[in-house]
Length: 370
Image (cartoon, rainbow, N blue to C red; front, side, top):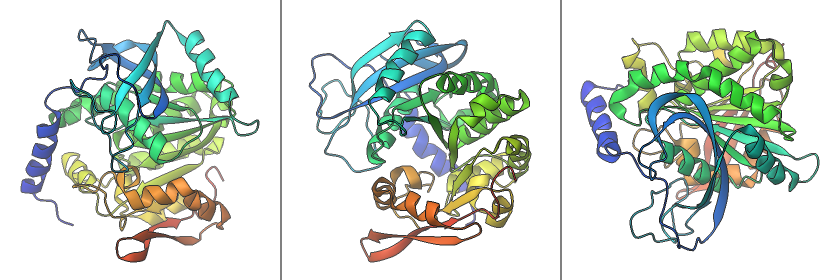
């Protein structure tokens, strides 16, 4: 696909129209939720002077700890979330039903451990979600609730919200914020490793993949095997990472046996735009060289053919109803676990036109770290 300057302007304009004002997270009291999802949040954003916004896009040297009970509306299309309005309709809108602020790690960890303890022994993991570029604090929290709900996750969901400006025009600012947030995310992963969680699975989207790999690289260079051993796996969705940079990152974390998976699509126009903005260098999530990723020991899930991926094709795994159904059913994980090194696995699902291959899982030729 050729991405023209006109395409960039039109795509950017669409984001600007929906992202001029920062969305609000705190909702008026007294609204009864339909169904809820608990979300834990760590952020190194600056506290907003507007209490309804909570945190803004400026950077902070401090990490803040929060938890939310999010009302998730039953009457919505899978893969999508909304922001609360002045008059909330619980059947159609996400909103905060309850929130809690912590003075530090102790109270946060105690509440997280309480949720972990509700899970059966041997199945007490946590999910850590790291959002991408052009994401406000409210967007990060509601997206985490949407993912946890649509993936039918039973583990506690933790979101790390780094200081994205939340504006499409601030791409360079967000990339600098990723560099700024490396230590904070590495420390957040350490915090989770000190909890009672038996494992940590990281889901990182877009530029959040770059942040995640940089944080893991930092832990590897520090020799923090205890924290890295706590990782169950790292899934990089639509990763906005230069392929050469990624190769170096993988080499640094490989001795620790971190299992990496990349969700990629050749129809991801957002990553093609990113490639242009960064001098034409290919991005990991663009599926340009699946073989090279497999040689690195990375599992690749090609979702190019998944329907319902949005205008830019940048949210297939998070928004495609058909793909979400496969993930929620457990079929995707079961098929991959049953596969052999170097195998190609067709992931079939039901679409409007009948049964079709929604994705292809390309298993690595060798395990990461070998």
